[in-house]
Image (cartoon, rainbow, N blue to C red; front, top):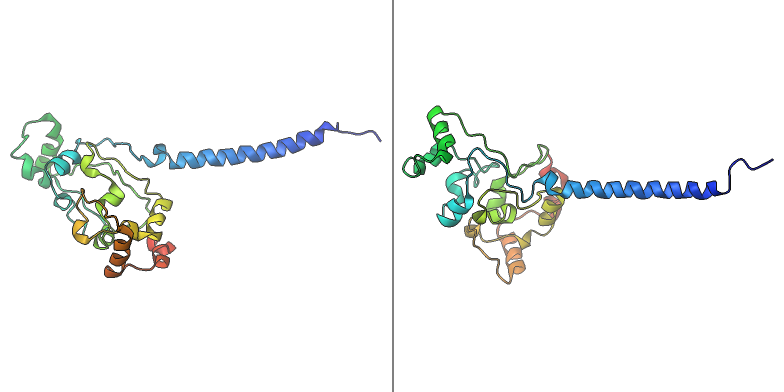
Length: 219
């Protein structure tokens, strides 16, 4: 009986199978890179806001404490968005006619809140509590970056699961004294790891097992 397929068919079949495997692996790699890119996580990308609020000016230049605007950060899971009244505490006296702040004045007159675009926005299936982190010595800088040098707010980190897990596995590298949590100019000392381990015990941090347990962040 004559051969139905040419001998080269075996080589072509092997090439096709291995080629398809490499294509699938390549597509998976591309997908992973897209998932980690600013196109998805918006890291380093300033969001369009109703008012171009500058943390660099308010925090860095004027020295306004984070808690003046984010009033619930020490006691609630949500850091809090300041009501228009907070803005008008100052801007009823200064920059009263600038067009840039008209949305603020309009909000104050009407009582309708400004609709800000979330910059650090976690998925709905992730539970995050600001107060726990603040009261365990995790500074604003650790998650939000150098906010005091941002003319427009942007995400400094991906805030993806692997980034959070890395900190939960090694919390001592980020823990600072509680009185330094809101200090944007704080510099970790040379013995940060030793200090961090001491503060872990002082602040009664849970074990790494608990910190990396699924139900700690997914409830």
